[in-house]
Length: 85
Image (cartoon, one colour):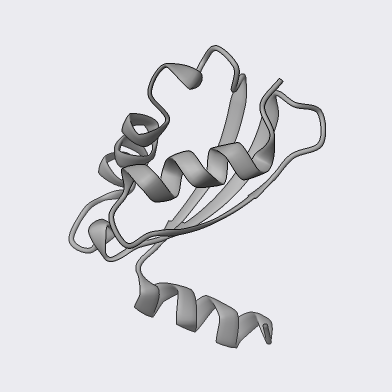
């Protein structure tokens, strides 16, 4: 059974200079917010592909479902400001 912290570590190890926030409580369904400069200039599909590559074979096996939100650091700062975080 996967833990959110393990997924966080995999993402952060697989995407340079990234920060991930991962939540999930049933061991197979998770939500992740990932912030990285690596997403700059890439569309959503390409950004998600980077995340899937970082997770490798875990995706679709130990991780049944993963909701992904990707941001550059600048975008994340804007989102945090709008949400008052």
